[in-house]
Image (cartoon, rainbow over all chains, first blue to last red):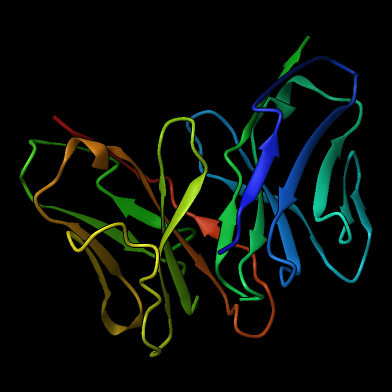
Length: 113
Length: 116
């Protein structure tokens, strides 16, 4: 089955700096890669996703890049703000399935004011 | 309702007891998922319901775990003879229709299960 590795497990940055979180996946049939943000005590929420037919997608201060050959994808957050502090999870669909997502173990991002 | 609703929000039980967790998805969402979130771990897929199709139970960790979805709406996750390793947050999610395209998941706030 699909295996998703996520690094780093914790990341601390100063406000205004950039943050990068990286994930690798094992299933070459995976074609959908969402990122979820979970603030402390809250539910996970989708922040951005990318499909395998594109290499990069941006939404304001966040962007995701995908390298299908290397089977890795990354989340980039620029001009970080304290409200970006949360746990971020990457995911990949399994076996080309539209519904079954395998999640990484999460990255705790702390943005220090 | 406005979002995915789960109850109870917290459940403390004794080892060996059975528990039932409830999920009420967003109205009109055909797909419903259960995930388990243990401390320091990712979200572990448990089971998936889509319309009237047979559920995908491939993520259920043992035969002590079962789930049903009545009338294509509310779902209950049942854990029999609970063990301490069952302690985790159980998250329910729903999505509009993942069979056509990959749809985003709307998560509930979860049930924190503690098995003493």
